[in-house]
Length: 446
Length: 104
Image (cartoon, rainbow over all chains, first blue to last red; front, side, top):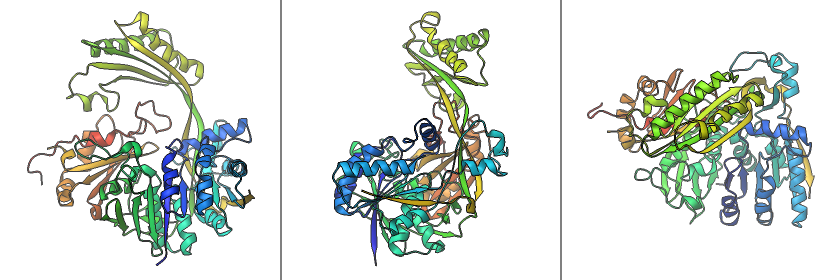
């Protein structure tokens, strides 16, 4: 039975670069996938593109390509990535430029577009899922709207010989499902196999999170050599069965436990995992350790895909201002509490205009509030943190200022004050009939 | 005994919804975990943190539960004022749940 090996070279935009090089060098893979596009990343990329039409693709695209392009070209490994972000065409052009600078010939690069549905969404009668508000009512603050495309345009690119496929917003598992559909000739309505392929895609999309990253808990769940964490490989067979593994000698571990944690990561109803390609069913998946760092996954399936596509909508929500300062030694917690009380009063006295405020004592109650932390012993040091939401950057700045003034106006021996203020691009979602998104594939030759 | 002694966990986020898996280290402990770690207990454990409904899904094939918690992320990951906007630390907080000796 035919098998292919797919490597996962990145699990988020800022992920480590060298595991992908290790995969290309020693992973015996035919496909290398980089998933680099978080929900909000595309809205921020859209802002970059508005400022400069040649930008808007992932800021690490060039670094990653410099690291792997020659290797992949020499070994015939095909690259699939959503690093095109808000501008796949510009991303593809950049890859061509890099290929030429490396002297690589006969490299075919595909750019997948059509996920940008901002104008379609504005023009029609569409509503925001979370709030029920008409999209049109947000027109002034909208930054981006990108539909989650499926595997089809990537499959088309591969069928036409693309060595590198650069996309914008596509469903993360689709980046991995596409090479399986292409290599095995699966039908686009073979829901069982598409479900299985989606399980594999979901397991791989966060890269190191299935090879021992985001897992270690010393004394309970130990993981060796995390500083050299290897990224995962899926060895997939034509019937959709798969083994998850990693490069021999790399750090981390692939065990049934790491696989189980990743299977349920960011999942709601495990029997109904909605993707543009299939409604995947994870609820009967099983894992079996079949060797060191080798886990067999079976039992995934699926049913007919939804008629709508999820659209990720980016908008300018507000401005957040923040300030922090530390206290240590005897009485640190009480001095921290006094500091918070002073800032609370100062923000009121000076009429700083905020719509939401938050007062935390890091080390005591900043993560889960004082109720969950009540039984914990008093820490040696604490960090005061005050955050506020405002309608303008100018007001947001004032929040951090009132924390910084604690230096000379607050409790004894406060140190290490920091402050910041930022614009908040937030995300909501909408559903769009799938016929309204029109994926397109363009090719460039190096 | 703490839940941490018999189970491991991971948190994921989507908008204002957090999901937490609870996975038995040894699948023979799964019935006991399923009997004790109810959505009501999880909601009580996170009082003041999770403000919406808690729904539980069971995946017996891997000895795991999945808790889906609404209004858990300060209005949504991308706009929250919280230090841990993603709620990544929630999994560890849940593992602190005390499991009484002899709990079914």
